[in-house]
Amino acid sequence: MRIEEAKKIYIFSLGLRIWHWVNFLTIITLFVTGLYIGRAFFSGPTGVEATYAYEEGLTMGFIRKVHFIAGYVLLASFIFRLLIALFSKRDRLVLPTFWRRNYWVGLKEITLKYLLIMRDDEGHEYIRNACARTVYPLVYLAILFMIVTGFGMYGMSNPSGFWASLFGWIVWFLGGEFPTHMWHHWIAWLIIIFAVLHVYFVVREEAIKKNGELSSMFNGYKFFKERPVDLDDIK
Amino acid sequence: METFWETFKRHGVSRRDFIKFATTITGMMGLAPTMVPTVVRAMETKPRVPVIWIHGLECTCCSESFIRSATPLASDVVLSMISLEYDDTLSAAAGEPLEEHRKKIMKEYWGNYILAVEGNPPLGEDGMYCIVAGKPFLEHLKESAEGAKAIIAWGSCASWGCVQAAKPNPTTAVPVDRVITNKPIIKVPGCPPIAEVMTGVVMYMVLFDRIPPLDSQGRPKMFYGNRIHDTCYRRAFFNAGQFVERFDDDAAKKGWCLYKMGCRGPTTYNQCGSIRWYNGLSYPIQAGHGCIGCSEKDFWDNGPFYERLTNIPVPKQEADADKVGATIAAAAVGGAIVHGVASKLRNSGKKEE
Ligand code: HEM
Ligand code: HEM
Ligand code: SF4
Ligand code: SF4
Image 1 (tube, protein in one colour):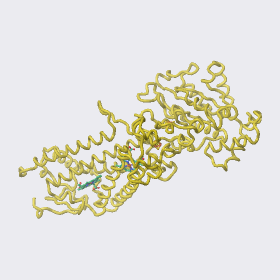
Image 2 (cartoon, each protein chain N blue to C red; image 1 turned 45 degrees about the vertical axis):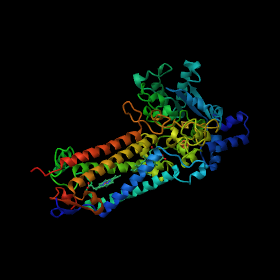
Image 3 (cartoon, rainbow over the protein chains, first blue to last red; image 1 turned 60 degrees about the vertical axis):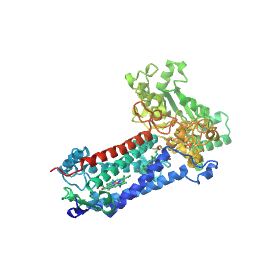
Image 4 (cartoon, chains in turn yellow, cyan; image 1 turned 90 degrees about the horizontal axis):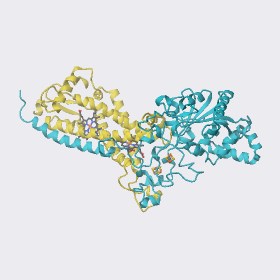
């Protein structure tokens, strides 16, 4: 397919693109620091009095501080994401459209394509395929879950403080603080496994269709041969 | 009933010692020094409160702990602050008359006595797994609770279920609040709870004639408002990343943090780090062993106690979240590569019209 024949459509707003990359960077930071918190796989400075070692190098105290700062950034960017969705239609693309026929047709097509039964240039074109439409909302839920459990555990150092009164309930809902730690840990891995597959499917789309998929999260545009059936979702 | 002050006088306690005692217990109850006059007044005017103490499915470690309370001495509490009317474990030899006495006390102080429950009722086989005075403990508990002003659930058994409720819970042992739902229940978890916490709760209830402020889980805020981790004297080593790796290594000898040995301090709410045990002598972490989280719900199922992370059931494998997560992530990368190559091949050439 040559670019001239294709329609160039503006899909992702600047706000969404900024959110996406801030979100990506914070989650990677949270994951790496979180893994250390869960399993301290190297020791802090030795030969130094603990009281002073605290301020030297990569210590548990420092890594936790980074985790919590990134946690605040994640919360802020999540709220930002909700706000832009409130005010602009194109930022609501994430909502799955179960009630429409084209969602189900799309789900059948994308499944056949991923099973290699159908070629990727067959079937209809979509702004966002049904598989992504289904998974992204779950990713937002997973991020929200990490925020709630994270700030729950964080806040319980003062059970009558602000964060605990906001998110402390999750600790008891999950059956205590130890299970909350475990859930926080499991869902962390789930998000990373999503990220691996997510990057794969983005690269795959780019490699097969050369439709600007990969660059779309930077400049906002994708290319289409025909009119995407779900074009109305962003117009 | 006589007041505490009257009882103290009868025992020959001087006014000075009485005031000292009142000051000490004010601190033990987690109250501000400005509350001392209130406590003194309460001790001069409040009558002793009758207590019925019953035992269900349990190991009696709560009683064992209670009798070791140093401030105040358990004997002071039992002899001068409450009026312990019934305790089947202590007075088993009394037999039938004791049961008569329990019924009499219940009738006489209907709506005014405190019911202290140690252990919990097993529901399986109509409660036949625990028999007290010829009847299932379940009935014993329900009957004794009926006229109680409030119920103290001693220990992790009465509060959460504890070891006898561990999976698969063969006797269907349940915490007290699953059976009694129409009375205020104060949970004092721990296996056992710290002695001074137990006496502190009792003192608060009898002196102020109300239940202590509770958190959302029904535990007295002043004793369960802190994580061990946040009061632990080894916390500096945690923050510095200095950890014990094995129980016989140099770090263990130096007293570094037990986090990697599975210490549950970061997830456990209790006073071990501050009140400590045996009159403030020590507590498990000080003795070199990690906390196992004995005052937390389900701590018995949240093992292994010597691992930081729980195992995820994987057939024929010991695997925690990191192992399982890394394996799946690696499999996803591998799968992506294979699927990617296959996709490229499938889409090569021209679209077949
Ligand atoms: C932790 C890592 C990541 C997370 C949690 C994540 C999450 C998301 C979410 C939720 C969306 C949908 C946005 C919306 O419409 O509301 C999205 C879209 C997108 N992401 Fe990511 N992302 C991650 C990493 C990456 C990386 C590393 C890349 C680049 C290779 C990437 C490229 C894209 C692209 C191209 C889209 C648009 C896809 C489409 O139109 O369906 N993402 N991402
Ligand atoms: C996607 C985002 C996040 C990821 C991947 C992540 C990852 C992790 C991991 C793997 C752990 C170790 C769990 C354990 O074994 O105890 C952890 C701990 C923790 N995280 Fe997060 N986390 C995220 C978001 C947050 C947020 C938003 C907060 C809020 C401040 C937060 C606060 C905490 C706290 C308080 C702990 C326990 C620290 C400790 O026990 O010392 N996390 N995180
Ligand atoms: S020994 Fe346990 S409670 Fe103490 S600082 Fe280390 S992890 Fe926390
Ligand atoms: S240190 Fe932990 S396990 Fe030990 S008595 Fe205290 S709460 Fe229970």
